[in-house]
Image 1 (cartoon, rainbow, N blue to C red):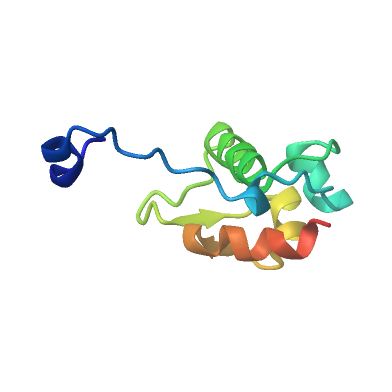
Image 2: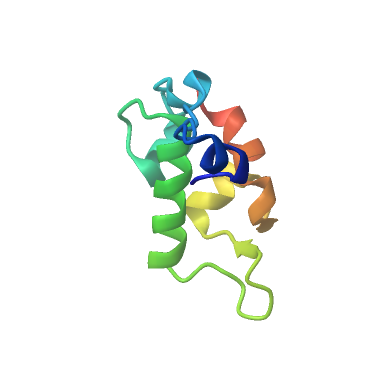
Length: 97
């Protein structure tokens, strides 16, 4: 991505470096491991694998795509039958070390 300022000066724009805290491998709890696997993964990969599982099992609410309906495995992780997609990162924070 080239900004107007960097294009005018002829210097290339700096690429954003990922935050090292998001790249640190975290060990999932047994409940979360049932969905994403037991191997330590970065937080970003855990969220990606959760979305793969949600889409593969058709767990997005048909009327409101921002809501996720929990099946038996996800209910153990979420603690409730339905969550907003914006709550995912917060809810998995309790299931990783």
